[in-house]
Amino acid sequence: MSMYEQLPFQPANRGEIDRVVADFPLATLVSADEGRMLATPLPLILERDAASGEARLIGHLSRRNPQFAMLQRQPRALATFTGAQGYIASSWMGNRHYAPTWNYEFVQFELDVSIEDSPEQLLRALELLSAHVEAPYPNAWRPAEMGPRLEQLAQYIVPFSARILETRAQFKLGQGDPADARADAYAGLSRYGGHQLAAAMRRHEELVREAAR
Image 1 (tube, rainbow, N blue to C red):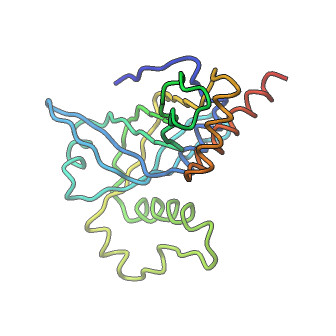
Image 2 (cartoon, rainbow, N blue to C red):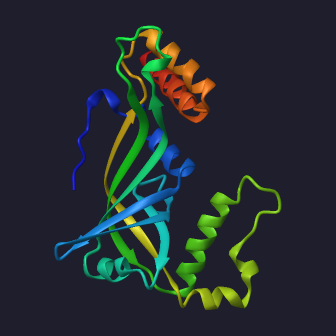
């Protein structure tokens, strides 16, 4: 499954793709088999081998989820991540000729999914996820603290590792907009709670400037 890509909206570098996956780990996992499509929202953790560059997404899903059986039959899948996003209103603009738009960070991976149904792999998948999402908090929780409940949980969820076959991304962050439109967009986002998107737009602008030096 391909994605319409526009060259002006490419991310500044691969690190920006990894950042979106790290900062917004809730993905949509999509797969298809025998004319049927299924999609499941799942938190996924990116692992990238520093030497080879090979990357994988690690996660788990419910055994009762029909997508589990589908992935056993047909392991090819798609995972999408949406980063900072939001509406850019024409009502913010000093020049009313500017049409409204939607800015966003979007990443898509084509995957080859391997079901790794063992207690060891389940613990590893849960450890990776909890280490990532608990990192900002003091006294971070670990799955081992569940004790016997961890073994019970293994009856209901199954871990998987998904090798990334192809990566596509679109970061539509105001590239090519006139300076006055960008200034009005920043002001509107600041006024109406769009701080996350404004930060993404500024970061992309700075990375492009640095790359051009």
